[in-house]
Image: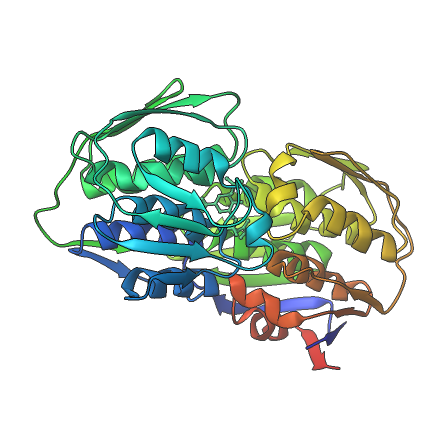
Length: 408
Ligand SMILES: O=C(O)C1=C[C@@H](OP(=O)(O)O)[C@@H](O)[C@H](O)C1
Ligand SMILES: C=C(OP(=O)(O)O)C(=O)O
């Protein structure tokens, strides 16, 4: 389904309850499978969380996790320790192009039995669950933090726990810290010092309830809406100041784009601050917040300013090659863009081409990142249903904030 977006008003008001963080939910679902006394509140209603939940309760030997990267990586580790269980773990065509060798090698070094069914280094995987007895492993940390979180999540269920030595420059660090915090909140002895993660074995004795904070990556689209509005005062929930999610860096990242954040009791209020003088070129290193790249570039495009984003090396192996996808779609609007393997430069673009059809490449964030641009020009989004990967009610949410959404 393609949709056409236009602005009903450039003055934005309203409230929205955003679904739970998919990153927190997916970690807690794995931990709950290992420690059933865990109770999860405000879990994410995203496809990625639903597919993971279904996989964990499935009695079938073949599991298809579609486009869900964290589910693929976390389940690879999880099924490796399910003694006596044989699982084939596969995903969408794109998932079969997303590398998993570093994680498989680390698990094999710990004693796991994993075979590639097709291409070496990529799903589908055939996993024979075993008891892992080794307790030390090394792993390159500069490709995807999800491999590291996957090992950390199974670590407390191993007889001797696990020591993980991280090699190279660590990428997406806040996601590793999120995993660490959740383990600690459960009562597990866990640490990250220098480049060594240590996690002690653990057994949960009593019930433990976790309340998932709403998704900050999803909040980014509201930041962009506010930045591109003439005036705005909106409230989104449930958010807190001390977040486990690295994408809460939005608060700082959007200050210079004219968005003021106020923390209320259980929510955030976003206001357009027209007194802010916009930078000519917006610069940011997004090594810690890769999922914000698309949102920020489109905000800059809409504001008519340039941007130079670095730390984008992980974007090439996500739902699509996001650097190439951004290049192709931004240029349709008349923008001049340069990309490398880990950076993007957008030159200021004063006049946006109208009625562009934005291709989304099975990537929820391509659809959601371009949507706020409707405040500056009419546009269409291809295959709008992709948003359900992380934010199933995204189009209702955006309609609630003065954007007209029509099926075409
Ligand atoms: O652990 C997680 O929940 C995630 C880690 C990040 O991936 P990388 O570590 O591969 O950058 C992020 O992009 C993804 O959306 C979610
Ligand atoms: C990269 C993402 O997800 P995953 O890697 O879990 O598919 C994302 O949600 O932007």
